[in-house]
Image 1: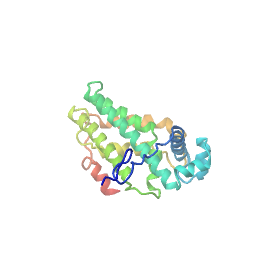
Image 2: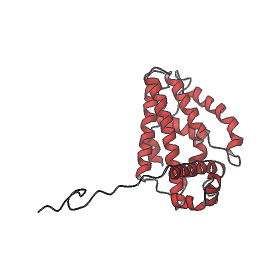
Image 3: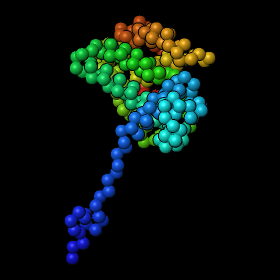
Image 4: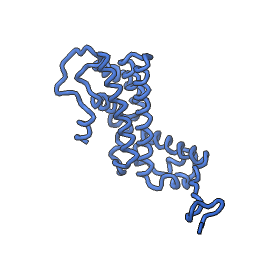
Length: 226
């Protein structure tokens, strides 16, 4: 004897639809993440939590509804930063593959783009108390690593990047050179960043003018030292 009828899927009833977030709710979440990025760059992760809501132009209830704990918000900012920097590397590599960019010019574009994202200023967030092995973060890191290694590989294959430089060298250099000096703010340090990045990039371009101590730093090396 059948137990299902019109509009009924077997004996379990109709499938339940998961409602999509409203557009205004998504905009509020994006505003919160953007505001948090700005404040973390300026003052670090320990700023009063409600200050993020004030900067985003939303109520504190909206902040706590989206990110009940500070660690939730920090993780989301790290995810956002990782995705944006990965996108920069992917677009740079795609431009080389399409013949639209010289391989070293693409590396240069990526480095300056990552600097504009304030990578160095946001690096201290990685010391914050949140789950560094959250599945979303693992996926994001993998995407970034693949993209940077692809870009570096293309520059090596074109003979435009010195062979004793690895993806780890590139990421360490960018993060260190864009991190403000102790006692200075990000805006005060900004005028020096592009100048110092260009000095760094001049040292990466082939042919090499010197012999580097040690061997090229890989992403695996960075993971072992973390």
